[in-house]
Image (tube, rainbow, N blue to C red; front, side, top):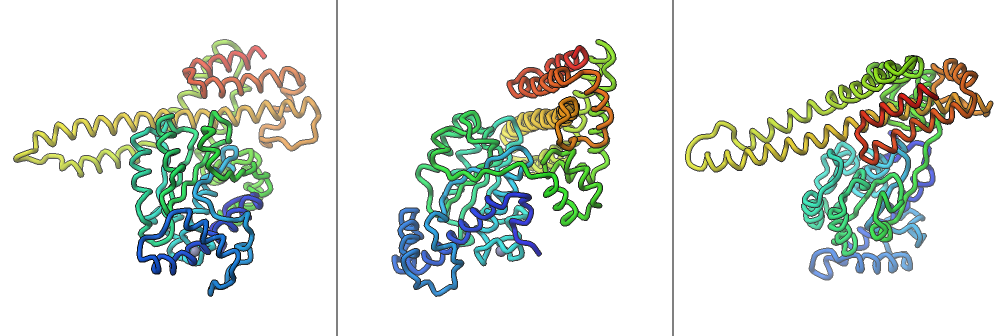
Length: 434
Ligand SMILES: [Zn+2]
């Protein structure tokens, strides 16, 4: 079987960096073990580990056969990383793979040992994953996380904290994280994922403490290859899905395998044809918003229910006797908190669903634009290429560009907290008027 980096499509450079860092981290652990015994205390902080790393680079006394990459001083391990790249490029896949390599008993990310396996399935005791369900990650959550992350790794290797969408940290949460990164607990590694290192996404001070691993938008051919190899998708379907997903691996996989995802995409790509008047534009806006709401609701309903029943069980719903009244008062507050979190997650899911639709729509107008310009590039949506071609003739390059910009402006407006319905209605009117 392939190792933990096998899912990182078209990211050779990043994979190379991570492999070397994992080897270096494994060497640090091997070197630290005897020293810990000598010192008779817990493993030291990073100063110790850094010193050990230097020692190690100079000496060949290490009894284990070490990969040659360890000798490269630039390949060393560090305690804070940022994975950047466009959506779907595999930021969180890269972070998880690296976490697995750090926990791998062979120190390589073999993909089959218990350390690799439990990390990838999300059950490793020393790997914490923060996936924000709401619009932002709050300070309470971050403080609790930082505190737990400071404990000694139970598996004897590393405590790994993965923060997906680190760009959604609130300022206070960012500060709590910064403190931990500035004074790293021994053996704790922070892996942040963000679209870019722009100050809007990640604070300059956090950025300055982290090593950045930039990921590229993988080429469609590489995405198609992984769909065929890993998911058993037929080559022609894989090629179509990879192009339609515009380099987004997870999206391509869904399009190739989930008929509902395909139907939703078809409905979105039918929009340009339906815009025949003002009324039709408003209808199309409603349809798009409602489809996003339905998709989001379907995606959170199961987890919402599971959480509610888990909380009710934990609170001992239906309990009687002394203290039960007080417990119920506390329970009401906890249920309220849960509802608030779930509402915030639902909002996020709606926006994500709407954004996916807008990206598909932008792809259509991009196709029309490239055709009007007779640019020698493959269309994003091969199945609506004829329609985009007709649009190109009717609108010319300028008209296609104006429409593409209308879609991109709508995305930006929603990102800037304009009410989705208002932004989408404005976009549909702009698309109709041209
Ligand atoms: Zn392993």
